[in-house]
Amino acid sequence: MTTKTRDPAAVPWGSPTVRVVFAATALAPLGVPLVSPALPVVRDAFGLTDATASLLVAVYFLTGIVLSPFIGLLADRVGRKRVLVPSLVVFSLAGSAIALAPEFWIVLAVRLVQGTAAAGIFVTTVTLIGDAFEGVQRNAVLGVNTAVLASGAAVYPLLGGALATVSWNAPFLAYLLGLPVAAFAWVTLEEQVIEPDVANRGTAYLRSAARLLARRAAVIPYGTAFLTEVLLFGAVITALPFLLFGTYGVSPVFVGGAITATEAVSAGVAAANGRFARQLSDQRLIALGYACYGVGLLVAWWASSVAGLVAGVIVFGAGVGLTMPSVDALLSDVVSAEYRAGALSLRNSVTFLGRAVGPVLFAGIAVETGYRPLLFAAGVVALAGVVGTVALTSD
Image 1 (cartoon, rainbow, N blue to C red):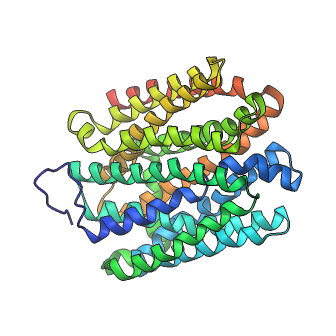
Image 2: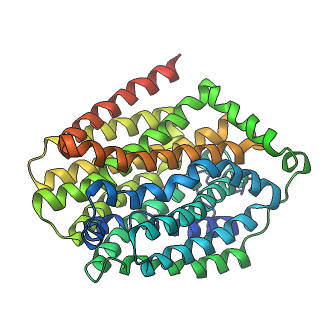
Image 3: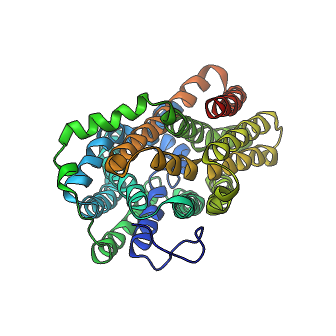
């Protein structure tokens, strides 16, 4: 169903689907950006290495890598609402329980549970948008949804940095915000009607959706989703805090502010995706996003000051705003509605894989190379993404 508005690029703010999706999406950045500024504090509290502390980010995404497709299937069987609401509740309760964990291995175990719930939130919110909207309006809603995600990621690092100055576990109490959102979703969201022939396909449905990975049209959205998250969570979310803290001795609050500036730019660019889509194809927007990644990371590598380093990652943030709404819009277009939940849940698996790989990859290699050479290498890889995207599009 497509919600009609006078302007095809306008977001229908009165839609119950839009309100619930945006409210749930606003919680998602609590998962990592909230705790990213606290990584050095958590490291010191438990006597960990940088690489071990980065597991706080990595394990959050592990179960989502495997379970996201099955969550998509479950959403088709029982309905989006019946998956989204329990996911919000578990996300909130598991996250807040981390504050009581006496040992780091318990923290990681609970983060696995919380990450599973987060996968449910990611899959159902994007699928709801794909179900309800199409064309330029889909780009507009996905763009604002990404902007909501980025806005939360802009605010929560400041909150996390401030709470981390109180104690290592104080940031995790913020997860209790998920409970009222779960109640709001239960009361407000209308349940999706599931077509019997789709709901009864079981694993055959997932196999059919997985075949999309072999299609050339799916290379750009899936590949971009993976590489974006590797670079974002490896270079910005993980490497940046350690680099700023270790090289310049800045406070967790300042680290949170740097991430906030990056996410704020990402939010502003993403919110305009519907207007950009009037002039440029999703593939071209993705190519421009890669260009921002490459330029931003190379600027951060070259910079000899805190200001230059932060300026570089802000340019990177603009690339995320260009890229991610276009990835979901492109993927929604290249698959039929019959397989949309499966295709988007596979995209979520790829996304979570990138988020899990990025922190460990960057923190692990940095033990031998330091963080700055990694920024240079990441910038070169991103610029190669521009070439690859243009080549796949032009053929």
